[in-house]
Length: 286
Image (cartoon, rainbow, N blue to C red; front, side, top):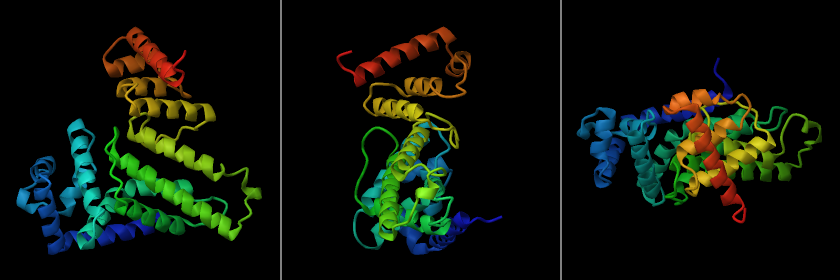
């Protein structure tokens, strides 16, 4: 059965099909990729002929299968699009629209996370707000060059815009949420949980679609680990070991060791050293 969220984002897919069939759009995309020296990499990654590159291949490059090489290409392509989207004219509008299409999976997650189950905004309403926020983020000119996937940063910026919009609407309408306290975490906490969830998923700290219950303690651990990862205190592997160890239903060290190709003792020793560095970064005098 089709849900309201499917309808909102389904319209984007319909528009995308029209864009892909537009000869002018295909020509513009090809010229961008050649100008940005990305055409041959995308052609190789998508098994396409360079002259045939269009929006479909661009989208495929922006949603990689998961290898390190494809992730690096996706980052480069997204940054190039964000630079173009920050400009003026039809080219900037088209670049921003492609960014929106690439970020639809994240937009769907944000929409579902922000719909109030007790009434108020509908999936349709929130979906439209998320799409508008995503487009504004793409056009904002904020290009993320720091460590971490730029797609994750675009999603977080979008979430912040959505939360501000919903919070402002809440104040304007004066909705009484007293009776909903048992069903919803207040907006700041809800936004914090979703923000951390997205950042953790995009940094491989838990599996995509992980529905673990985030307690306050778990939230703080993930935030500390994400900050340490961004600042270079922890490696990606160390961040995963710590994040996995301090959660409900965490796998045994033997499972983590098997996945890393080392012994369980080595995993414990490396995690212990990583925790020590993490603690020292939080409390420098310790």
